[in-house]
Amino acid sequence: MRLHINIDHVATLRNARGTPYPDPVQAAQICLESGADGITAHLREDRRHIKDGDVAALRELLVGKLLNLEMAATDEMVEIALRIKPNVVSLVPERREERTTEGGLDVAAGGDALRGKVQKLVAAGIKVSMFIAADPAQIDASKAIGATQVELHTGDYAHAFGDISGDDDSVRNELIRLAAGAAYASRAGVDVAAGHGLTQDNVGPLMEIPQIEELNIGHAVIADAVFMSLAGAVRAMRARIDEGLSNRRLSS
Image (cartoon, rainbow, N blue to C red; front, side, top):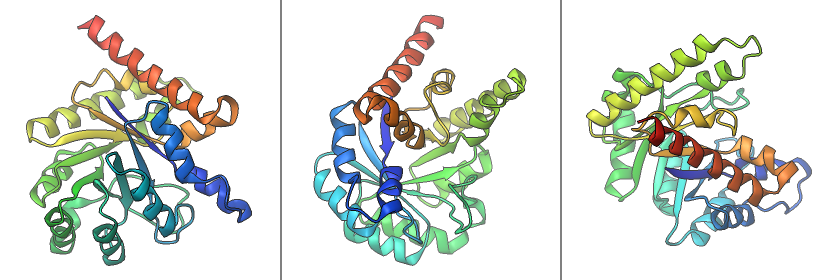
């Protein structure tokens, strides 16, 4: 299971005071040294956390390591990606008024404009991943326009898991839905990742889905770092993932 740490909110903390610290690039180095397999960063159109200079510095740091650049499917962002050359571009929906990415990208409605952007990235040797709901129509559309990976949006699962009403059926139903989507994508020959709202508490059950081979986790790790250091938070998340994988092997 590949674990990619999203370091956006290190930049959020930096930008709150306009200081040069904490440095998200330094955070990326600590994450890699502590068990992360790669680094994810979302360059938003409004630059609310990660800045252009951060992305360039991350690319320089991560020579031989994986950089996953999350971004909206805009001409500006495609040009930046073609210049920076991340290993992976994850295309996500983006609205200025949202606090964080809400829901998956509607690839099926993207048409020729989205296809053209994906093809530019693919032609440059960049792997393209689509951040989508676990919906067969969106998976089919992603593959059809050239994406070789989908990242299943786990926000609804995370919300169900954290519901104080303790509705186990909602959690179970979300896991079933994600498992069905992951299996469908795998049969279609598409790599499967997952992310959004994942924490030490809820990541374990997700490991019951064998087709998921990559996780992108950010906010919870940075929040845990307040209490246990960034290195400790990454190691703790890695341990919970490994525990979930071990439980899956034992149950099988």
